[in-house]
View 1: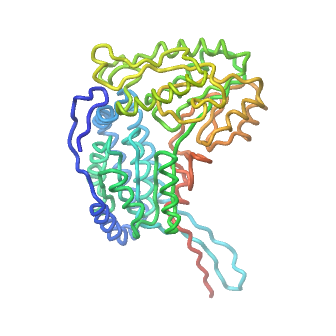
View 2 (view 1 turned 90 degrees about the vertical axis):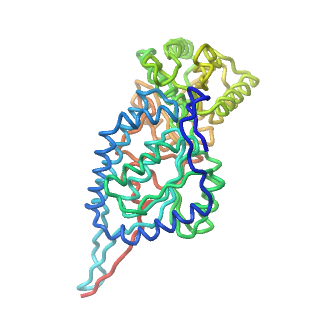
View 3 (view 1 turned 180 degrees about the vertical axis):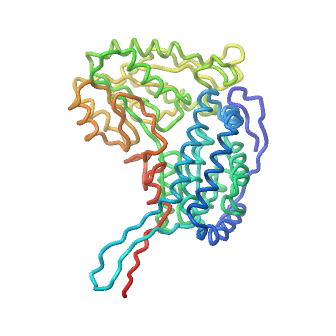
Length: 461
């Protein structure tokens, strides 16, 4: 299969293998054999290998950033940020190898001892999307290896190059043969084979809610656990502020980083009617300052969409929203001037007059489209924020402490941000509720619940 540059559709970056179910079977079998030895390696030794991998990734950060921008399309500054974040998360995961704690409890019996400890689950199927082609694979591989599991990685067909280079880097760091296996290919050809394989004991998936639901149904029939990170329709609820420009800057950054192609992107601004006009004007100023262009242009502030087909999908959702009464306040044009005609470029859009029932208020667009929804008061704001099938991240902007605490309590989301955008941190649990997530949260120490089993032991003197 060939991959192309999203900023230049006619530029082929490389050709990669199209894996099969048989390839997936060989990879899982290899990982299962390797797991029997890897689980016996002491945790600090596993952690030392991961620390070396983090050091190598940090030294080669610029190379990996260029790879990300080439095959995914995001601007170079964002790619550098992604690689830097991957280094941080990998170092945290390396430390986790020495933090597989259990409990020692009083026994009911004289001269008895009761305790629990953690054991690695086994082979993990890791299925990653295209929007963070370095960070998401690291987010799955790092904790799997730290806790004594092995993994078979399947990246997106759109971004296999970064995964190939990552696996080479882990090998250079000292990861033994078979502990990480990489299989390229489609979800139907490879992904389904991994999900159904009898030796796969857990599935970590990042992608759409529909696909995640299908995976969970299949895994449930085999009594196999899942860690699902899925879609989002994340609100920024604006109840009060002292500086509209500052709020607009934070919302725009959260909405249009990675061209809006991230699960935690803010896609809805829910604002009090009394503040809507001023905030809308400030947001227009922020959008007008976003220069759309290729990653190699140092003045670019937002890159292309990953494929022309995905851009068409974003435009279809936008058209549906307009048919339902919304109107464009700014942007939304396909950019075809000069060199931009060769890529999948789209102007960032601010959409007004969006009702809570509009498709742009309900469905994940996964692109540079920001909807503005006006509400009467804080009660309606919270109701509208919670009125979607998703529950990943949410932001609230207010100068009232009581309002902030109420929103934190009542927001139906896995992550809540007060007076800033939806960026997470490298040591904090990451995940959602409702249609946005299922299973143990990733990134933080909560990964322990997914990658390990608890075993209880009883001793009698």
